[in-house]
Image 1 (cartoon, rainbow, N blue to C red):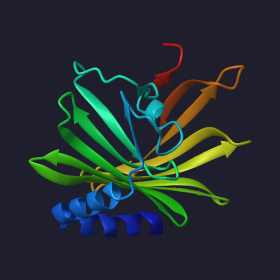
Image 2: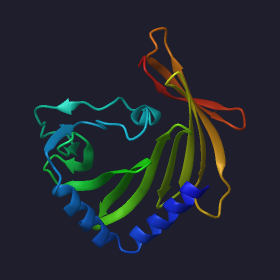
Image 3: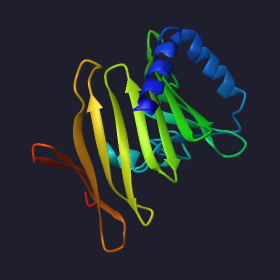
Length: 206
């Protein structure tokens, strides 16, 4: 898949010079910041139902910062209201991670760093939304994947996910199925595997 191959090359380029690349992206983002909002969890999904796919409720903006919370997120926006950077922080404002967002021609890109002594590349992801369809490609330190989104009348029905832990492994396939209630609100998300087993990963009723 050409999108994944391109992503792998860019990931390796960043990984070979990750400190300088992190500092470059940080400087670039800091020069564009127009607004900052705190949140308890993911405030804006990178792709449809990102939070819910990982079993999480969507995050909420925090008007007052609770210093007793173990971790928060600082969301930075440019003058056009676009999310450009997210910092994972502890209650004392120490930064533990940074995600940088770029609005490329044809796709949205997220470059994620984790602080392990210094900031190190964690993952690189690109989300494509075009007339040909929606897809996501992701490359992380451990593993890579590509996702094909199936929509009907602008409603997400399922995602076909192919993923592997390393380049030496074969891709494994699973289907993520979205179920809605009579009000067309998201109700349940189910992982369905090739061996016939399934797992509920999100239940909006809980």
